[in-house]
Length: 262
Ligand SMILES: Cc1cc2nc3c(=O)[nH]c(=O)nc-3n(C[C@H](O)[C@H](O)[C@H](O)COP(=O)(O)OP(=O)(O)OC[C@H]3O[C@@H](n4cnc5c(N)ncnc54)[C@H](O)[C@@H]3O)c2cc1C
Image (cartoon, rainbow, N blue to C red; front, side, top):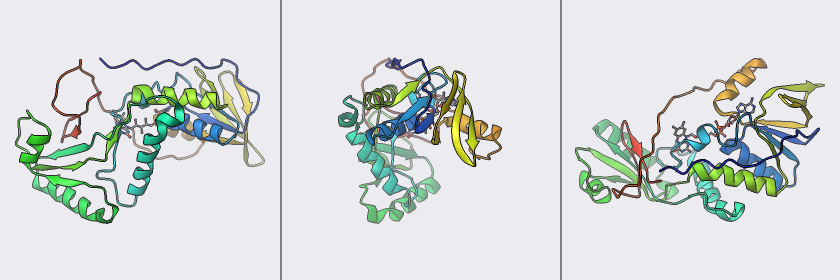
């Protein structure tokens, strides 16, 4: 069964002031807080629920380069390096593993897309390759077959969403970040054209800078302040099964279903 997300203990009182307020305790907010704390910059992270209570604990955890635009791949490679270093950085396992990611296709058109993508990243040495049905059967035994083919990148991987954000938040606090949970941020105040404070349910906190990491709520938060932030919310469903044998440790994506080992 899926390991339940760890609830971490944080402080109740809101500090009067800090340098940076991070709004939102998902994977983006906690990683930003950790990085700021490591650099000795005072930071307070404010989360309306609890750490990773939204998509950051419910995603598939894939750490993927496959099918990214060639210009984005160096960033994805940097993410690979950050995830590989994370256990040492936070002193805990975050479930990162280079298990490989495979996408299956049942159309020639999609195989053409994969072929063109592989050519577009040829110089980046990713080790990605197109797969035949026979190779898919060898790597993922027991499937019902019928695929036109697939694409596979062995250096892609996964982390465990249920472990990562809590571990990173704890490390951030150990390095000096302050975290307040169950406290929604209502708005950002400015003074002489610059950020001066953040107004929350528990009062106001003076600060020099704000990092908004509010996930799906960032668009509405900024909309209330008259700032357009055109993001598109998508709804996906994820479920976990009891432990089961096989078929593979590789994370597999199909046209209408994806899975990976937890
Ligand atoms: C089903 C699914 C599968 C996915 N699979 C993958 C994958 O395999 N690989 C991958 O890289 N990504 C995947 N993603 C995307 C990934 O989950 C997100 O990109 C990532 O979690 C975003 O993190 P975040 O910190 O920006 O946002 P969130 O995790 O949404 O965190 C935002 C936090 O801000 C808080 N908040 C919002 N407004 C306020 C406020 N006013 N005051 C205080 N707190 C506030 C929220 O409570 C929330 O905890 C998937 C997403 C979904 C939904």
